[in-house]
Structures are given as C-alpha cells and as structure tokens.
Length: 170
Length: 288
Ligand SMILES: Cc1cc2nc3c(=O)[nH]c(=O)nc-3n(C[C@H](O)[C@H](O)[C@H](O)COP(=O)(O)OP(=O)(O)OC[C@H]3O[C@@H](n4cnc5c(N)ncnc54)[C@H](O)[C@@H]3O)c2cc1C
Ligand code: FES
Ligand code: FES
Image (cartoon, rainbow over all chains, first blue to last red; front, side, top):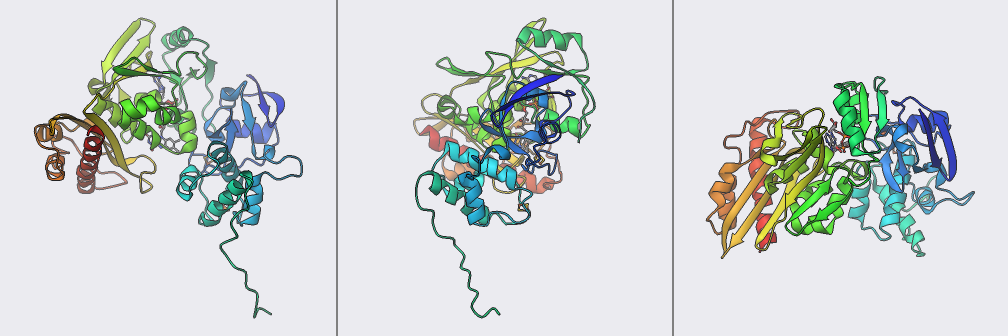
C-alpha cells in the first residue's frame, strides 16, 4: 500500500505491506536509524517518536496508520548544529551511558516539556514511565530533563549534583 | 517482529467499517492498536483483515448531556483522563484512564478499546462496571445497548459479536452527594502497568449515611466483577473507616480469585480488600 507522511518536515512516501511497523518504515525505508528498536513488545520505549505532536511507540503502530500524519523522530530535534535543549541537557548532565534508550527518552522528554514547561521531579518520572533504561538508574535522566526545562524557560539550570574531584589521582 | 500478513482497510465511515466486518468473518476492528498490534506481533492472534476505524470522523467526542457522559469509540485514554467532564462526573473512569499504561499508550489506546478488549487486569473496565455504564454496539443489522454488568463475559471476551463495533460507552454522572474513585496495585509496583488487583467504587451519601454503593474489582479473576457483598454491607452505615474496612472484608465473596504470575490467591484476595476499602474511602471523600 502507498503511504505518504511528513517526517521531520519532509514529505516522504513509500510502498509498504500493511504489516510493516512504523518503526521499520522509518529505519529501513527512510534510513533514519536514530529511532531504536529495543523490546519490540511495546514496553521499552526506545522506539518513541512523535505522531501529530504526541509521543507514541513506533513499534506498536503500523506504517499505514501513519498515512497522512506528521511525524517527528530524534533526527528532527536539533536545528542544524544547534542541539535541542533536551539533547543539550542529556549531554551536560550525563543522561546516557550506552545510549540505547536515549532517542526514545529524548522524544518523551521533548513531548513532556511541550505540554508542561515546569514539571516536578514526580511529573518527569511519570512522563518517562514508558521508557526503560538499563544503565543510568534514571537519576541523571531526570536531572537532564530538569536542565532542559530550565533552559527552555530561559533560566539558568541548577548546577550538577555531582562533584568531580581529581585531586590525588595521578 | 512482524505480524502475519493481513489485509488492511482504513474505513472512512462507520458504515464502511460495519460492512467490512459483516462481509469478512475473520476480520478484526482496530482503534488504538495498543492491544491488537502486540498480540498480532506475538502471532497469538492473526486476523485476515484489519478494519482500522482510527480515521472515522465523529467518534472522538465526549458528550455531556447533563446526567450522562457519552464517550466515543476514538476517545483516547489521555483524553478521558484529562476531560473535566469525566473528572467531575465519573472520576473513577478518569482516574482509571490516567493509570492505564504509560504516556505513549495513553496517547494511542482508547477507552472503548480497553473495554472491548476485556483484559482481566484492565483498569477502565472496573470503573465502567462500578459506574453502571451502558455499552452501545452497532452492526449492519442495527444498534443495541448492553449493560456493563452483562458486558464482561470471560477472559478477553465481551458480549460484543464479531461484527459489532462498540461505538460509545454511556456513563451516568455521579450527582450531588455521590462520588467515585479507582485505585490499583500495578504489576510494576505503585500504580504502574496492569492491575495485580484494583477496585472502583461509587458511593452516594445521604444525611451522613451511605445511601447507595457499587464496588467493582479487576485483576483478581477472569473478568471485572461487581463485589455485591461489599456494597450490601456498606449501605446504611455511616461510612466511617471501620464500617468501610468491615464491608471491604467481603470483597471476594462469590468471586473466583485466580492465582497468576503476579500473586497467589491469598495475596490477591487481601489486595482486593485493601483496594476496595481505599476506593470506597476516596469515593466517600469525593461525595462529601
Ligand atoms: C505497554 C502497555 C501497557 C499497558 N498497560 C495497561 C494498563 O496498565 N491497564 C490497562 O487497562 N491496559 C493497559 N494496556 C492496554 C491498553 O489499555 C490498550 O490501549 C487497550 O487495552 C486497547 O485499546 P485500543 O484502542 O488500543 O484497542 P485495539 O488494540 O485497537 O483493540 C483491542 C481489541 O479490542 C477490539 N476493539 C477495539 N476497539 C473496539 C471497538 N470500538 N469496538 C469493538 N471492538 C473493539 C479489537 O478488535 C481488539 O480485539 C497496555 C498496553 C501496552 C502496550
Ligand atoms: S521497541 Fe517499541 S516499546 Fe520497545
Ligand atoms: S543509557 Fe543504556 S539503556 Fe539507557
């Protein structure tokens, strides 16, 4: 079946089987491999993208369901060389280790901040309930999203809650 | 992980969808796909035709007609959870929708889909049962109404016929002196994920006493179930914490509690009492 959608501002189309999952259309037809496939059972959130402005799991949507939709993937976050505030936050506050969950985390974080400019820590943790991370323990992810929220509000982010002390290291 | 091959039709109207279902016995209707697609990917379920009603206009409204709310087939969990009309008129349903899955699931899955799917551990099923909702089902041969109490038949089985679409759920609003609430223990701890056990309660207070009550459980048996013994024991009491605890002790009376991966029969029976009491206390607080 023929599908046409707008992905990261660009109109794209393709010929897919009805059973083609949106995540495979994005990764394999469009070669946008930033969106990851983790569990494939709808739980991990590594495949999170935005469809018509809402965070969704692209492994649990058929490409044909997105016909006519506006899609944003992690590749659509940055503005040229200018990182999106959530990307800067994950960089500055060490919000990733292996990076597998990161594209989905970034999309969930960006979606949250579009709806709630000043989320509490509790609200941030609930907003990423559908995104699993096996590395970080979530702490730095929460701090990264707080950093991004402050940046987007035009405020100075809180300093990191770790200290690097290299004294005595030779 | 790909589903088996299937034919797909994006219905442009309800009539088109109903005809496709009537003409194709192996067909399945899809709304949000949040349960259907995972089942198809696991190949536990392989319909020959998927009839997607996601784009049918006019099915995504929550209508408030004064004493009842009509929630259309395409109203997503997120919309049910954040609707002021549902929060004030059917709080248990708004709370159950807010606790369904995660943000991404709530952005796609629908209230009617969760009800039609009839998972033993779903949230909104218990809420509509306690609230005494009515399901409106359509097929090419017409429309019929099914009371929530008759709708849930067994595990993943509702009273819907294969060629019927649940077009809306009608929920009577809790009026003055009434309140409702829902809560659960989730499989991932806290209130996260499907219910290990959960309860919805609707309570009407009159002159400081409980005049009417309805309590429904989810997660403990093969389907959401009314806990009639609890309601019976509660009516006529002053709704004090002791009275509620006493009534909630009858939560699993007449209910077949099933052990599963998430808890033994004993543990689930205990949770049913705990969550019934919590839902009743919250409903009484909302009523007064
Ligand atoms: C990660 C994850 C976590 C989840 N956690 C929870 C949770 O905590 N609590 C909970 O209750 N649920 C949970 N769910 C399930 C979720 O609520 C589903 O959205 C819901 O069960 C189905 O709604 P849907 O619109 O997506 O239906 P679909 O997946 O499209 O359909 C499900 C079934 O219902 C039928 N159906 C759907 N709509 C209609 C209709 N209008 N008329 C007739 N038949 C219909 C379909 O034919 C299919 O058999 C979870 C799902 C996922 C993926
Ligand atoms: S790959 Fe989609 S939720 Fe895990
Ligand atoms: S950084 Fe490795 S899974 Fe999150």
